[in-house]
Length: 336
Ligand code: EPU
Image (cartoon, rainbow, N blue to C red; front, top):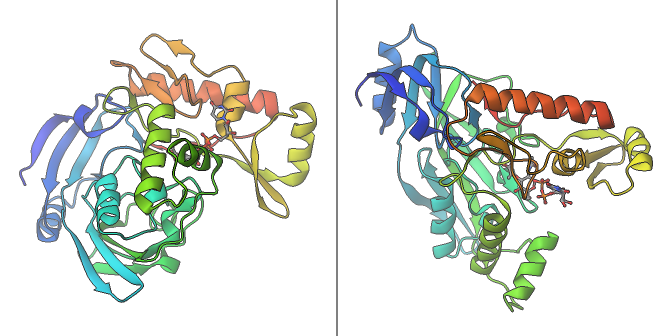
């Protein structure tokens, strides 16, 4: 823990964008975190986990804090369930692998999602039919104003689709320090997602284990999504928009091939990837950034692009989607 100045954030965000933090510090204990905060009350804070869900468009004048809280432990268990607690700075995928190695099921479908454990509940990460809220028990977070640790239950996190209370009412008020998941020793697998079923078949697996499901998910993600270590990106750049069913019918009349999922009796979720792809953006490259060739929902930095350029590309895509389908896209990433 040492306060540094003018630190390039390029290694700390998966888009690989350069932006300078006026002030920068890591923390590896909650006490360190408390101390840094109390000594820097005058500065605006930005906490980085894996830096996998942010678009840095300019230098940051405040204090960037890199979460390095580590540790994974079972805090309670019985015959059927285990409460697995992970410090917020753990890499999410390492937590998934740890759970699988120990036979704890529930998060295998979320294998290989980039980011830290602490960032996972912020946006209620999800993939292949499972969201963290499905296995979430509680989290601990430090209240910035008081320095006190508070626990939040699943209900108190008020999870929604890529949403939680930490992105809304409590935005900027707490720093998540640990998460606890309720995982199953006799997991019921969720292989309903078409691509998982197909991959398990290809693997010749008839009675899949959590490891098989994880392997299938890893394979699917690796074939479809760019690896941030090789090509800068932040996963899905936009959310899948939810629209009224009546509006959906109008759009489907014009675009019968549209990809969608039912939400409830009155709402439908559209695949933003399909909307963007069908609007002709997939694989488009502009200098050293563009739209990924296999998944139109993912914007990529081939190296050396600026956050402003990628932001402008996202604006252009949003305008184009609005014009073609009259649908408003919303960014999933946090724009800084
Ligand atoms: N599609 C296209 N063209 C594309 C991309 C997608 O036509 O370029 C179509 C696909 O054919 C499919 C539909 O759109 O019919 C949905 O695509 P996909 O299965 O790839 O999933 P998604 O809705 O684009 C969501 C999550 C992903 C998650 C996958 C799998 C959001 C914003 N994204 O993507 O999450 O991995 O489902 O469950 O909800 C993330 O949030 O960063 C992320 C990667």
